[in-house]
Amino acid sequence: MIINGVQIDDTFAEAFNMRGTRVIITAQNHKWAYNAANAMTGFATSVIGCGVEAGIERELTPDETPDGRPGVAVLMFAMGSSVLMKQLENRMGQTILTCPTAAAFSGIEGNERINLGKNLRFFGDGFQISKQFDGKRYWRVPVMDGEFITEETTGMVRAVGGGNFLVLASSQPQALAACEAAIEAMKKIPNVIMPFPGGVVRSGSKVGSKYKALFASTNDAFCPTLKGLTKTQLSPDVESVMEIVIDGLTEADIRKATFVGIEAACKIGSANGIKRISAGNYGGKLGPFHFHLHDIMNDKTLGGEKA
Amino acid sequence: MSALTFSLKQELIQKLDVSPITPDKLSDKNIGEISATPLWYGKQQLRADNFFLISGLDTQNIVFDNCSAKVDYIGNGMKTGRIIVNGNAGAFLAFQLQKGEVTLNGNAADFAACAMAGGLLLVNGNVGDYLGGALVGDRKGMRGGTVIVKGNAGERTGDQMRRGLILIEGNVGSYCGSRMLAGTIGVLGDVDEYIGYGMKRGTLLLTKTPKLHATIQDCGTHTLPFLSLMFKSFRNLPSKFSKINQNRVQRFAGDVGNDGKGEILVLQ
Image 1: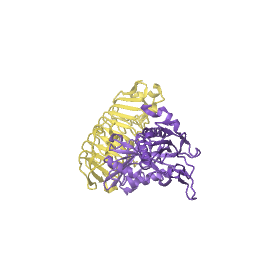
Image 2: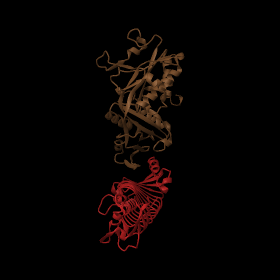
Image 3: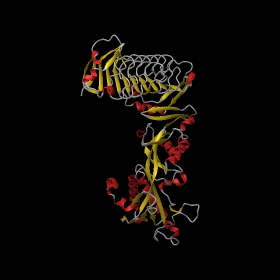
Image 4: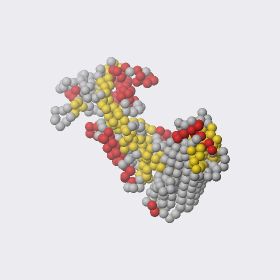
């Protein structure tokens, strides 16, 4: 399969079950909502070292938020519910409670509720006040800038993490340009985040290592500088590979984001050095979700109005 | 289907307890059984059709016409449906109301919304003392739901209130929110002295600074963001409170004689 001169590999991305939640952060203005949300989703690129994968889903206008202030929606994913709860509570306490004017609200319904501000209220040292509006409980915690407002709980849902695709290009700047274009388009898709820095990851990994202590190590088959040394997956004209990892609330959301991302990367085309699109998997044995690139790119329903 | 209507036939001498007449208690009954519903009248029990002309079929919509202040316990423990009262209501209107709506087009006597747990009570008139209070001997009053009073309320409004919302568009008597445990009471008119007496937690929302007793403390004027959430939750209520859209308030805390975690917020 070839789109605009870019070869789409007949392979698939392999993704896993995760637990996810959405939190709405509001503040006096978008600047401070972003300050809070950027801190909350900082150092949350991969569950391997960060506990959770988190990112800003989108900006919210004042009429979209519970308290009528500007806000942003944050999505957070973890491999299990207990990690998600612990990370959410820690991050809420250190980044939202501390951020001037910031408030946090539940952004998702779900059968399971997890603590949002339930335990943060104890920071109020007895001066905290609970209020219930429309069946939802909120906490008012007195702080030095006034009052910190947070909903007691947020919803937790079953989600999908680890959707991905690889961009193979003739040069590093060209690979990055294609990834930037892809991320720009994918940011418009609801219910997904791309958790890595700027949405892009350059250190794709394989399972295992020559060192006993490590579970994963560099994906040498895709490292351009090792072309002559390993069983490479790269042709002579590929000089740089970058990956985009996608976490989403449902399989359909990731399919949509994958489609939009690959479409945007291919639009730059082989004329500008984009040679191939591939995807990462573990042979299909580890993850229950398989995102076949050909299947997704042939799915006319994903193209929206353009299809 | 027309509403099941109970029209009072004659002026009552004794108090009449209509607690068996609610949508959930009558839902599976036919008109014969409904007419035979025994009601306490003073110390004797008589059939409902001794007092009321009964018409209509829809047990989920009950109407009391020509009602009087002798008729107690309207909407007692109601779990579903709707009751409309035309005329006045006696004591214990919407007593232990759990769900559904009670609308009164007239005035209510004391203990309206007593021990109410949920649902909506709308009074297009005045209410007596102890609105949303506790049953005598109980230590917790109203614990949920919404009460809207278009007129005035008497003394001890929200006494020992535990949760829920009371909105009064007129004036209230003294000791409003006394011994309040939590919840919210809003008053657009004037309040009499000793507001928040013995109040432990909860929010009293006022439009004018009242006369305060010594154990209520001024905490200054603030812009409180939670008020936007609260006023947003008022938007769909049939009340003037749905129009409030400002969150600058003077905050008084108290009653420090009883923990002092309650607050009186005066809109600026």
